[in-house]
Length: 58
Image (cartoon, rainbow, N blue to C red):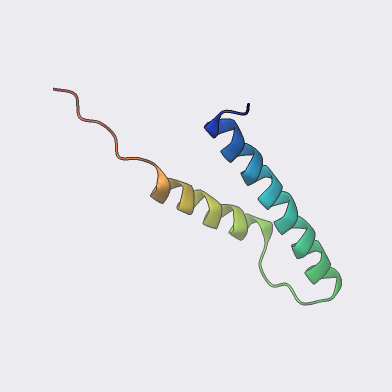
């Protein structure tokens, strides 16, 4: 059985691959104005938002 973290990483990899494929198709059609750098920045920002808060040590 795949652990939760591994399953999340796998899903993220699948999603990124799908996103890249879609962006490539859009670029070939002349429809994309969003760069991979911008997409990666957005993904990084979302990951920061989703991180659990740091625990305070007593």
